[in-house]
Image (cartoon, rainbow, N blue to C red; front, side, top):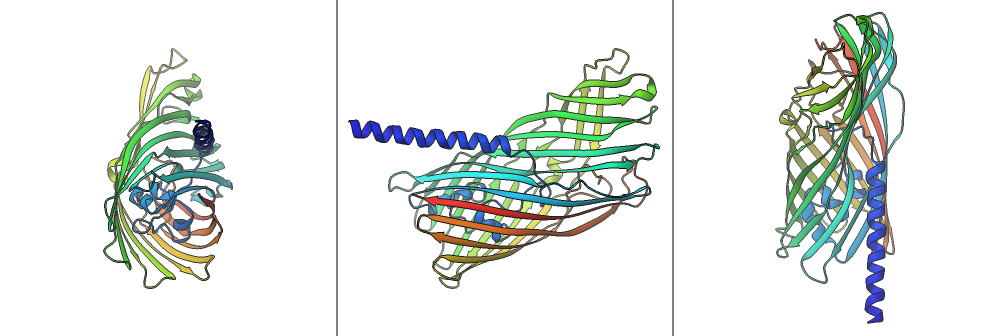
Length: 429
């Protein structure tokens, strides 16, 4: 009885440490500059080196955010943790500006845990992932209204993913991950500028919400050489609320007016992906993925709904629409891993995701326009530990636009490239 109680206490301690760690990661993952629209291109140490090619080859705890059916390849138990350091480079040009965005390094942690129930076909998992987001900051911009001002945005989406996977047979596995997501949104659009009835600078803070969805995966292994994966991710309706919106109405004699703010029309999109894994020999692994991302239904028109002003002379309520009109995106990922020695694995990959933002609605607030990505990575195993690292480069993308709702004149330009460093550790027990 005493041994049983001790084992139970140890399990409870491990669970408590895991939950505390997950809450820490969830609270820390608050900024993300994503590269397939608002999605990161990869999740986990192996996938990061292979440019996100993972749907047909996932086999560690990060599978719950790639293809949850891949958890059935966890033989006993595994826990993984890691961090990605994103370093975006942004430039905005218009008739009065040629300005680089503020430089920053954004840490994005991840944690995942999976264990097989006894020696049976059932595997359970729990993890936290910074799914993605976007943002940019430009200071001291010359505005069309004769002022110098700032644009700033920060959109994030992180999620907890309780997961169950079941190995139906030696050739077929199923997986289901629940997505319990949290999003936060804030932005500034020339907050110190006011120009009559034409323009009121905006400063939105603290808008947030929870959203829910699911990821369903299937893994099929018709032979030792080939594995197939199919993954569907449902949309997660978010619509951040309970924010504070400050409108600069100084030129109307009202000063800065503070409103309560809610956001409508902000959704994380549904996705459908298909992946193939090929092992020509024991040393080489090749992964190929193709994923459809339904941005057109998720990011159409985002509306800031303002109410309850702190100035009785100001309008009692306002609807401020932002026309997004994003287009559906196809993402192609190709990755390879070569086992150079029993301990060392070398990886490389290429990822392409067509820019989903039309030139007619682009602005410096939401410049998630990069398309081509190159990755290289290394994995090293020693005993019950595996360390994976990768470097990701998003090639420079430049888009010229004439957004009629943004006061930047004709032939304004957004330019974006990005470096990301990934580092992960996995423990097998």
